[in-house]
Image (tube, rainbow, N blue to C red; front, top):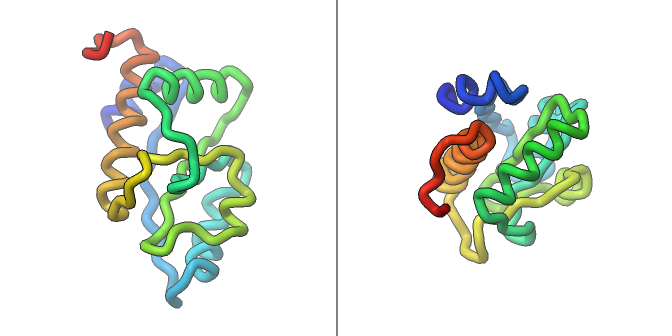
Length: 131
């Protein structure tokens, strides 16, 4: 995430942070309660199997559009093994899917980190091997 932060500064993006939370009780609702303070004032995008998968260029364009529309804080939320609490899904202004498969939390986190970094490099005009 340090590389995404460094590359994104000149683009008006960042810092990019990863915040792990752990609920004291199991379940979606307790997890939502510990996540909620991190979402205040943010444009929330839920990583959810029912979301929309985006190509890397489309993902980059969406981040640029949100930045250009004045969004100062964007938060991507990845839930636990059972997904996100319905209240968090309702709060989200967007939903992102990594395809129709089910992915472990660590894998979803790695894929999101890669896509954020890729989006920043695309927006910075870096080479993109799919062009």
